[in-house]
Image 1 (cartoon, rainbow, N blue to C red):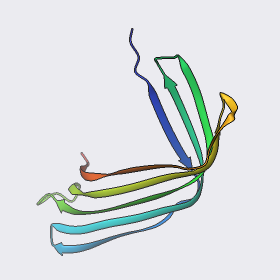
Image 2 (cartoon, rainbow, N blue to C red):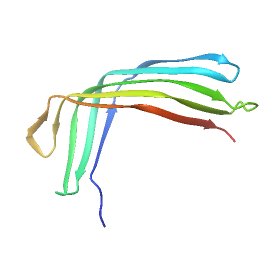
Image 3 (cartoon, rainbow, N blue to C red):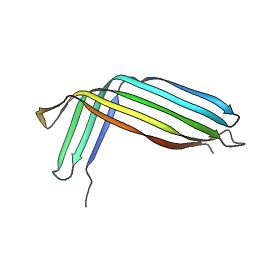
Length: 124
C-alpha cells in the first residue's frame, strides 16, 4: 500500500475580526469578513513517505483571513443561500522548533492561500 507524504498546520489562539453584509436587492447581498490573530500557537505535523520520517513543529505565529463575496438567497426560500466570492489567507510562523533534532529551528515561514470560492447553506 502506497501512502502519500502529508503535512498539516493548526493555529491556536484568539481571533478578532469583523463580518458585514449589505443588501443590494431583496435576494442579493454583498458579504465580507476580516479576521486577525496577532499571536498564535502553531502546531505542525508531517510525514515524509520517502524516508519514513515523522516529525512535529511547534512555534508562535499569526494569521490573517479575509473574504468578500455575493450572497444569493434562493427565491421563495429563506433557508437556502448560495455564496460566491474571493478569499485571502496568510499564515506566518515567527519562531519554532522541530522534534527530530535540537539543531533544527525555524525563524520564519509564510503560507498564502487565495482564490475564488463558492458555497451554499441549505436547511431541510
